[in-house]
Image (cartoon, rainbow, N blue to C red; front, side, top):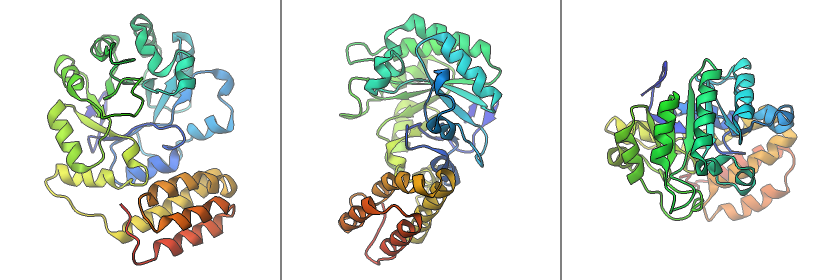
Amino acid sequence: MKIAHFTLNSPTALAPMAGITDNPMRRLCRQFGAGWTVGEMISGNPTLRHTFKTQHRIDFTGEASPIVVQIAGADPETIVQAAVHHVALGAEVIDINMGCPAKKVCRADSGSALMKNESLVSDILRETVQSVDVPVTLKTRLGWDDEHLNVLNIAHIAEKSGVAAIAIHGRSRTQMFRGEAKYDLIAQVKQQISIPVWVNGDIDSADKALNVLEQTGADGVMIGRAAMGRPWIFAQIAQRFSGSLKNISAEEKRDTVLQHLQWLYDFYGKEHGVKIARKHLIAYTQNLPQANDFLRSMKMITDAVEQYEMTVFFLNQTEITLR
């Protein structure tokens, strides 16, 4: 798969998820073969650039190229200024967020809310492309609601504006993450535009990835929630594309969880890393009946060494089988 001058080693991408796809998560997914990872959404608001949250979201230390920074905003000037700023800091791709369904984001007329104003979308994309010397990509949904599924129009605007690739989640904004993702419109987009298309939404297995690619003709799959607690899904998809499906060993999964914890402690510091690690441990151990007591204990632990050692003890139990 090729996006602008970047040739990817795999047609798989990690979708940006605020509070989830941070530096350690992105590095881990790349380690398992993700060909493209996108940083967590960053507000275009310049007053937020130096906050603890933003500074960690733009830290790509140790990550492989391309470095993709995603920006959210509601007007061309703010987004352009943010894009120029982050390119100066080392961003190799600017991704425009028009897919976030969060109420806080949409109330500010950004994220998915931008899809309601195609003229504004055109201005944002055109001016951003013209203002930076790196590729600009777009993340979007099918439309604002089921009565206004205008992703075809948005895709044509993106192509005309010079956008290098588009990622489409197969739901409207009002669906949030309810129901099932639909891929028919994404297939139509792929038939009508020439730029690469990522298909996103409900892709939770190697077989599903292959089926959705066949159904849509898309160039690649973008994985979001299914990568939480299962970063090895990218290796499974790559194996399936090559005609085989090899299980990731229990030992490799265990080692991955422990590596993830260590990277979180190193990245955030031990005190904050312990807090961030809790949601990842929930994702890794969800649906395991043995995990209830373990997760209750995790809520009380504030020490990194204790959290790490308790996780080692839990994962070493012979009956534990991670997904």
